Image (tube, rainbow, N blue to C red; front, side):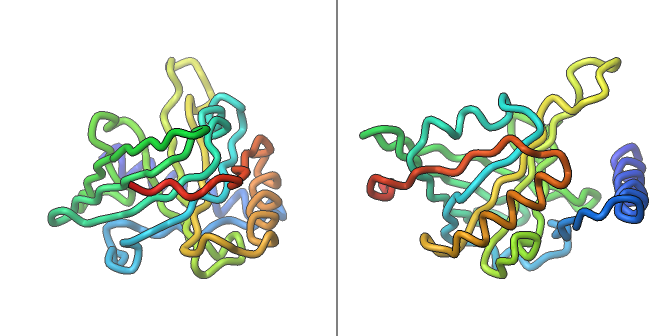
Length: 191
């Protein structure tokens, strides 16, 4: 019930905000209704944005990142990241569950985190996807989420710089001005 109320509140808030602000809004891809098959496979990390440095700081240590999304069971997706940090390659996996009553995914071990998919058209990229992670405020008296970041992924390693520029510009319009793009100077990290 609370999840449904929160979803309606966010929807109404976004409509009101869009009427008052000139910023474009990304189109949410409801994970319970989209065709998961079209999002399976390889994705290249391109950029991350947030309101605060702490949300994206860990990305600054990496040269490049490649992720694979696989469906391991009904309504279970595994995201495996191959990340290059210096001369080392790091591999990590995260498991997400899709629940019929929610529009986001539930991450194993972090059930309080909202994990949302947004259309890449917000970055002028049909072959991109935007992944958002949101965690509620640490204390009830806090008014700001303790984590709120958007991450841009592309199907192709090489994309137009305009895609990242559009993503950063649209994010900045929503006061998400802290960003990171990876240098991608070393070979891709595969295992």
